[in-house]
Length: 291
Image (tube, rainbow, N blue to C red; front, side, top):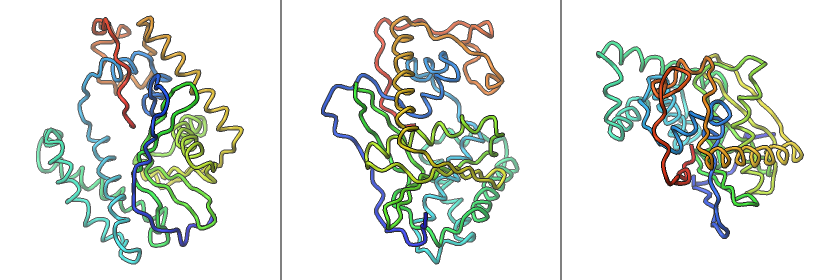
């Protein structure tokens, strides 16, 4: 697919007009939570417990913001130096929005090192792609679609490229390293989720799903087809049925794994001797979040 001369378009949110009842909403993150650990899904989506920001996650947010703003510039001005000049203003903007981020670092030296690592990731982007040849159709686009049966799928797509011939590419930036072959399927779950929404909205299966791993200068590309996305939709509906059953019974069991080392909720997890919060008498449906 050629993206050398994509049509320019103002970024916008594609929000579905809900003409039928919504039984619940699901984002890639919350779906992945339930697949990884049902208790984690409960604590995040039902109990809605707060989680502390981490340097790694905040760095990812910062780098995403820089790459989004980069495409505000004319094509010829999208240089590495221009991208680097966006980093500190975007960091200041994030701090204004979330003052608690100031508590992430003990001293100026630690902050400087962290900002340096963010600069490295921004620099790496230019080794993977020349932004002067790309004109995204959408950036940080909120998309949603209501499936038959009332399940609302929502997500935020980092970048959507549409060629003059109508071919679509979904792009996602990752600030970590690329997964080993055995874990590529898990990495593509999010992208297939986005591809399904795009297909249902536009009636066109994305030609390419592209994950750009800035942590190790690698890319992962995949081309889905209609049959695969139809199966994926059925799997999501089955996943939602499992979530609904767990919600009806209050049975959200932990699933211990190495990922527990990074979980904020170990103190509430029975696998670590903890006790979850009391089950609410009335369970509100998960908020219609996109991420």
